[in-house]
Image (cartoon, rainbow, N blue to C red; front, side):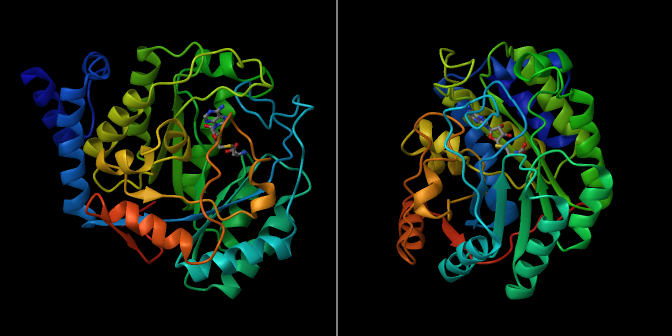
Length: 352
Ligand code: SAH
């Protein structure tokens, strides 16, 4: 216990740790130590952000995807996936409803859908920024060229989420087809930060072939890259992927990793992910208690939610009706002494 606490203090002080120290911490997922980390992480969150939690409305606007990630239910090889895409009007409608709920950030996420090319995305972003000038737009639409990223930034997009998925090139290659490259992913992340996006990376916990060494490498990568946001969720198998029979990732380890991220960087925007909420009924609240400061309820139209099926049993239960979503979320957060913040919830610190 003493060694564990010493390493947490070192992580807080230096924002980094040696590979050995990471491995030591990651082996300690037992409840007692995990709670020590969670308490320290939550205290730091409250010190930097008060008891508010940022909310983002996520619109999953297309599940067409030209990529073939082995873990993902909307991979192009999954012929059973029922494809859909929303048009501009439908997406704006989601934002309008979301705005009424009190959301001031919209996260637009999709597969790598060639229909929604950069030109169309730019027009969409411009329209959203014109209709909702006080709102931030986060994009999560996969890998693009630097000039495409720049166009989207110039169109007004504020943030970009692109999980690095694995900081270890060999492990990255185990969970992606050969044509998707680790170096391209890393280049995209560097480009996004360079352009000025508030940039998010992240990874799944428990993907096939992942070892604690890989996770230690992920944490080292994050401490070096200094992203503005980090998305971490458990891997959950999808029945129509090559990883259908693989084990689900550990929620406990996910919670520990969230706490370690918070201790490493108190300014971080750190969501309690949908995957965590899917695995545990109280996953979102536990994520917040472990140091997360963002939740991202689904504001996609009810009829398409089950089709954006990245993994089995994905939680699609966020109420679709104005007001109810907000009051339910508020109730859950008040049960743990926290409250929704109405506002963009930008990253406050470091310049890009
Ligand atoms: N096309 C976008 C969005 C991908 S889906 C992009 O490439 O960024 C968003 C995230 O969901 C992925 O980055 C991945 O980490 C996660 N995800 C995909 N399949 C999953 C699974 N089976 N279990 C848990 N998370 C998964």
